[in-house]
Length: 471
Image (cartoon, rainbow, N blue to C red; front, side, top):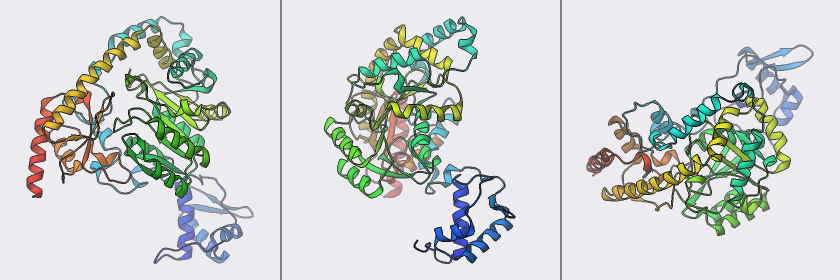
């Protein structure tokens, strides 16, 4: 065992103490857990037993651990509360992964929110939802009041199996688990596959909440540059070789924030690398129903071997009726369901019944047909309006709601976003989505939320003012 590295100005005793504190903070040592013996800990860190004795004595004096005569040392007291803001680099609040969500949720209703990630409520299936609620109100009491089965409604899982089959994904109902949302689905997969310190690959840029969720799991996050056809496969291979990641999380279709679509060629290259390295891929497919023509799916090429496929109805149907799903290989299902029971016990029976009813009676299909056409018009208008004021789309998405666009040279999206907030507009600055912080000149626009002319007048004025200030 090589000696423990010591920072400048730090003693071996302090290093040993910090090792214990970090394990407590990471929750790998919980209150009541027994610490390693003095001899074992000394061997692990490559220090003397006297160093460990002094470290344990100081930790005891701080009230962090306690000695039990004849038994050893144990963690006591309360763990420090988890602060996600402290897990990653200290970023300016305008490019913090929580900035967009907090501002979108907490600002007044009269704010414009082109940076948010959801459709206006007026675009959703309000009437169909109300009809379904009235019908469910007449259902037997157990459908309204009982816990649902942990895997979720078999009828809905059968329906989802057929829907995934339309994308070439062979996912029998017994390989599908219902969840409360796409976010919960990814959280369950992380609980299943990750230990603190494991490495996860993400696209750069990618959905900002991937960063926050992975930090909550104490993962080491590595970004791979994203291109208009998918991740840069050479950079992907280099990252896999250098970091030996456990997971790769991505969107194959209508990637968030760029709107790009994975090409079949890149998909095959990524799957080949994953197979050779033992990497598991999490394919977040919550935007599937926005597509006019289905894009390639990693899960379809892979057959749910190394790919876990995730979906949700939160973006298309309702953010209040939370219903998502996980499709994965059969030998992983039981252990995943055990984790779901441990963390939330039952299933979301009422939400699942509502979604199934809307899927079966054709209301959802009709809603999505109209929604796709409405989004296409909004996307065209948003792109044209941005170009008029000098903001350039990175690409023209074939569907969906997001447009990834570059500001004029030299302008900082975070600065523009702060100034826009003062004028009642919530924007989505690029570095929120970029692990490498290389997207400072980009903004993500939600086309459905970008139809007010005040947005463009304000942006043009703010950009002109900032450009003069910098000149």
